[in-house]
Image 1 (cartoon, one colour):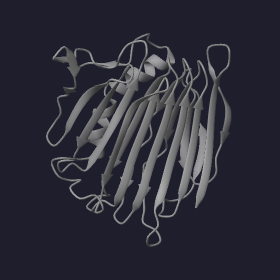
Image 2 (spheres, helix red, strand yellow):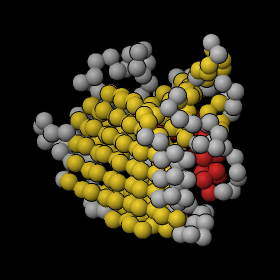
Image 3 (cartoon, helix red, strand yellow):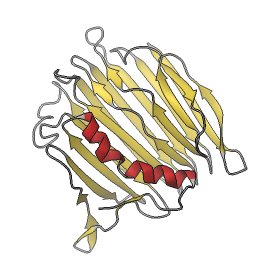
Length: 276
């Protein structure tokens, strides 16, 4: 199955945002939720099971100058096996113009046993753009091994590389569950915050040789999380691993998501900053 969806948000000239374009096709259906604040929320609704091996899905998101947009999904995406030798693909291309804000907050991607899936995200941020970009991966459904999944994320800020990261899990990625990668964790994810007003991340970074390095966040048993300042822009990356999806979500949304959304909606004029 092949499907293409496109979402364009623009400033309305009165301090708000309107959706100029909202179109999709099954299984990439786009639905606008009832407004609860100044930021429109659009849900990606799966119109069919999957992605199944052989599916090729593409979503394009554009946020105009001064506009703000929140994108969610109604449920986790479960990558499923299909015909032998086939690969499923999901690609997201996002562009955020100057003074625009994008809150990308989908549910988890689940690598079901036997799947072969590639998830690719490419984000272009103009100087002055703001971003909250969350990605979560769960390695297998309950009591089953993980399928093959490759998650690749590329983010540019003001025409310069900001983030390049890729993670492969499953039988085709030797050592993925070992101490060099997930260390036995079955859920992993990241939260990228970009804020030109003030560098996000830990309120107090640890010094090393006159610079800064990441800070480990306190976690419970079987979990780990660390903030890393990024050299390519006013940004920080929170990366976490956990034994389950619920714990992972707690690590990636408390209090980062609340702070990011409050900033974007204007409820508080505070930077995308999270305590140590």
